[in-house]
Image (cartoon, rainbow, N blue to C red; front, side, top):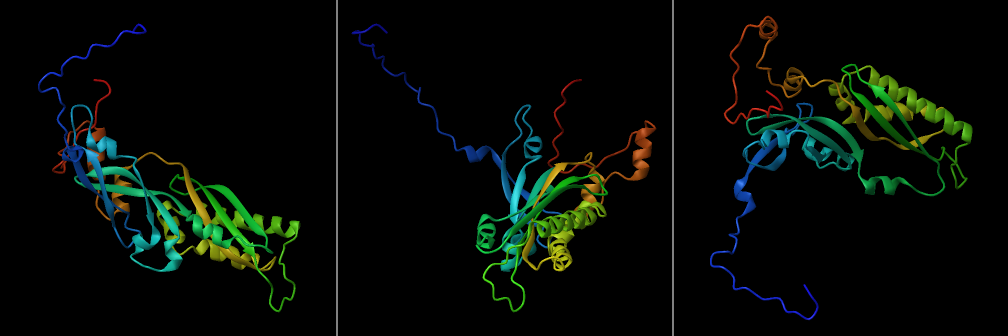
Length: 270
């Protein structure tokens, strides 16, 4: 608009005001289900827009990540469990239920900062491991040196050689414990943190340690998704049996039971 000219204001048209619609009227609630490894299977609820056109609700729900405290998963108010956070990822939608799987573990920030103090050595190590069922994980471990019995000296610093020896023992134990089990068995070890107890007992011969924890577990790579394996993890039977899979390979059609709110996936090409 040119300088000095005033913009002509037009009278508003009748009915031009947009109606305000509550966005929650077009959303549905879904239940988040944890694997059978945990005591509390009902983690919580989540929202998603209803299926509309090519936007399917089940596709929007898959791969959502939920972070839950271990105390909530185990139905315990113990302080030893509240600082551990487990991450669960949605891998399949069955009706109004989201079937989740393990996606990682971490410690809370306040717990980590409360352990770091003066006059001691902070030792940490990490390694990449592969489980027997094909998951590649990166496991982090931490530990702190402790005063010996009847020690008068104020500090408890470990020598550089001792730190290297302890770090090597940490990596060896983490590789051994993770590579010899499946992901389900590994989660069973992470809940009571038995791996950290083994590390502390093994490293006591080098230098006494305290506050040894598996600090973090990250899932770097996952194997191909199998519905039967996820159903076994949740304690349910897979609707498709081995004989039915053989018939499908031979080209024989089978009847498949679908849940009430089943939504077919979007086809990229026909």
